[in-house]
Length: 249
Image (tube, rainbow, N blue to C red; front, side, top):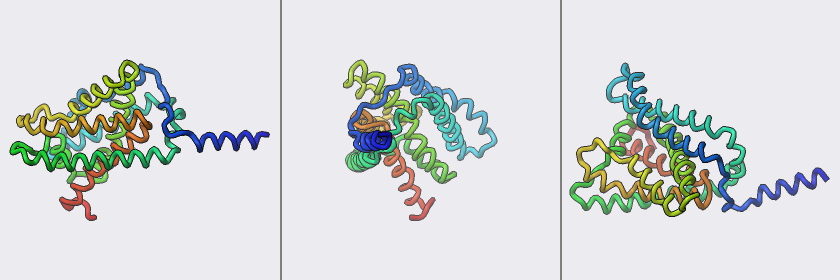
């Protein structure tokens, strides 16, 4: 009888529908995830700057990013560590990764199409976020791949999808899509860039990306949205490295 029950449990786990409800965690934890993100993006860099005073000027941005995203990842993990078992079935379901990869490719293709169209505007150029990333790729390329390509997307999914989107979706789903996508876009906006036109031209890229990631999270899981985000970021990091000769294909 025990063996039969064990087999039934295995069948139920293996046949779990992909579109199952995302496991819930307390509201305070979702807000804490977003709050942690804001702290690590706006307050912690000031402290990190003191820590990297001895680092060469051209490498400071990279060093600060490593420190801030590393601490953000650890803090977020501490917030949700006891809830991780709720997501085990999502991590085991390979379809989440496949679907997430598909969403990631869709975001990449949209970006390529939009950028080619945006280049028709005489004021088009790389926005501040993209320029900062491109300028930092020559330093510690392996760490850039890990932090910009993997850790960064995971922390942003926890903050914006598991944090903002999920919290607001309990009030209004459409509002959740709009607000979470706009917050995601504005956090990638170069506020200190004197060429605001460039920032606004690139702004729709982040709004659409945020909406697509929210859809992947909403309809599938945070595993799917994280996979999509990682796919897009790895493409954005590795391809420029290949083109500039930092790494060889």
